[in-house]
Structure formats: structure tokens, C-alpha cells
Length: 98
Image (cartoon, one colour):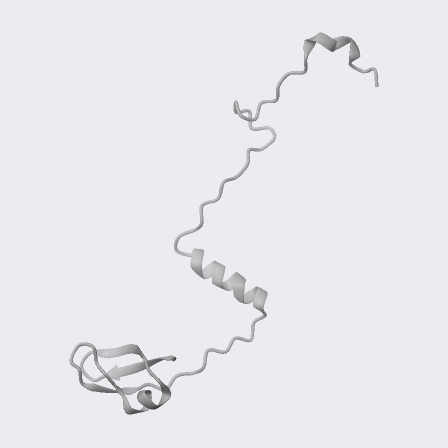
């Protein structure tokens, strides 16, 4: 069942679920219960590819609140978690013996 937009003379536009036949008869306003006429609407047809539609939906979803992601450390970070262990000193004689 689709959502239709209706216009109340006193309270403005509101949306409601209705069948096609019921939408043509009008819907009661949620504030005053007066029967309101259905507004004409344009079908929501997209001419974008599915990949662009998904990208647009992601951009719209994250435009107000961006998603927090964890980023790895850079190789030259220098923090304790990223410091590499020094090579063992017990085999210094093996350096350069490849």
C-alpha cells in the first residue's frame, strides 16, 4: 500500500497509507478529522545506475552524522604500539651473510 500526501485546509499537508481507491475519496486529517483531498505526485523513478544510487544513499545517510571509522597507524608514527622490536643481538654475526 503506497503513501499519499493529503492537504488539509486548516493544518496543511500530511501523509497517510491508503489504497488507490481510498486515496481518491480523501483521508481524515489527524488533527481535525476533516476529509482532505489527495495531492498529485510524481512517481519516484530513478535514472541512476544502482551503484550511483547506493553511493548517493550513503552520502545522504552520512551527511549529518559521519560514520566513525578506525584508522591504522602510519609506518612512521612512533607510538609504542607501532615501534618495531629491535633485531636480536645474539646473531649479529649473521647480518649481511645472505
